[in-house]
Amino acid sequence: MKITVAEFPFYHLVSVTGKITIGLGDIQLRHFLAEMVANGARKIILDLSKVSYIDSSGLGELIHIYKGIRQQNIDMCLVGLNAKLYRTLDLAQLISLFPIFDSVEDAAMMNVSAA
Image (cartoon, rainbow, N blue to C red):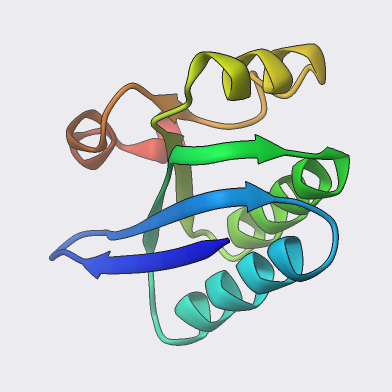
């Protein structure tokens, strides 16, 4: 898994490439986002358009990350879900948990807290 970040005036765009799976993948994402929050990120857009696979551990980690970030009044949303990833989140009944947008531009313009 590879993680890259781009900083914009009102949000951080975190792009994930590869698989989010048990072991290094989920731990790496957790630590990366925790560091961003510690450094003052207030809104995180998590671009998953290049994620090819996510296992149950990866889903659990996304839930854990999202809840922890929201408890700190930081906005986080998901963008770029391909059909396979959307279906996985839907089967796990997680679609309603996360604010999900079709594009980074849509997410950047929306108030995630109100989504």
